[in-house]
Length: 110
Image 1 (cartoon, rainbow, N blue to C red):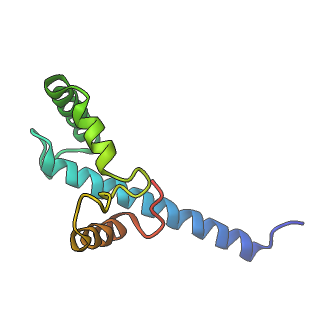
Image 2: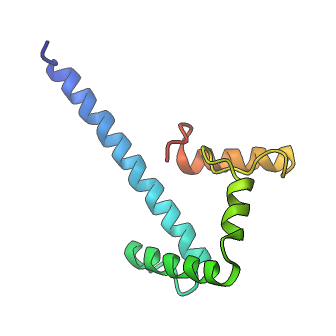
Image 3: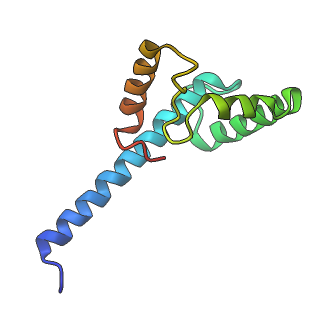
């Protein structure tokens, strides 16, 4: 069965919305990285932000080894990126969950 013009338009609109949300999430994450990573500022372009982030993370790994990576993996939920409840209070967890939803939407698809 062929899709009707309305179905094609709706599918295209869904795709456009998903792409717009994906770009918004990338922009928000790069803005956050610009605040966290040395040598980055609000004027830093995305590619440069990623380059400095990579260099910074390599430096951290060189200084601290993989222990920080393992700590992070054991502290945060892989699926949601939110701290596991056994480590933070429920109030803080709720705050993290709401900010995650604001930043990444309710679907939590990364």
